[in-house]
Amino acid sequence: AHIPVTLQGVVDRCIQANGAMGLSQDTPLFGAFAGARFLRIADGPDEVHLRTAAQIELKRQRYSPLAGLGKYPVDRKAVFRRSTDPVSREGQARLRDIKSRL
Image (cartoon, rainbow, N blue to C red; front, top):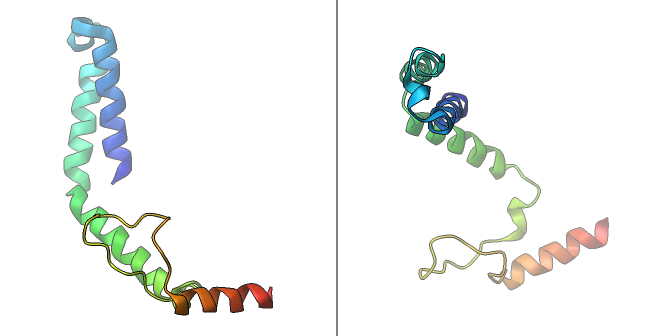
């Protein structure tokens, strides 16, 4: 999913750098842009690829040795968890236990 998007972005930047000449027949950029766009269409919807990659990653994280450290409290004010969010007391105790075994 990332290669077709990256390719189209690179070709688009090249066209922008060349100005009107980037769309002329003097350079192969317009053909490259059309090919990159066709590649994106043939590759399928980006959202499907990203969702599939997320599902695979979440499945892998279930079996991570860090999965047992506990849950983070949900902060409804922020969309994403920050590294400064507190870890539960139970999670801190488990982390100390893991560190002591190393």
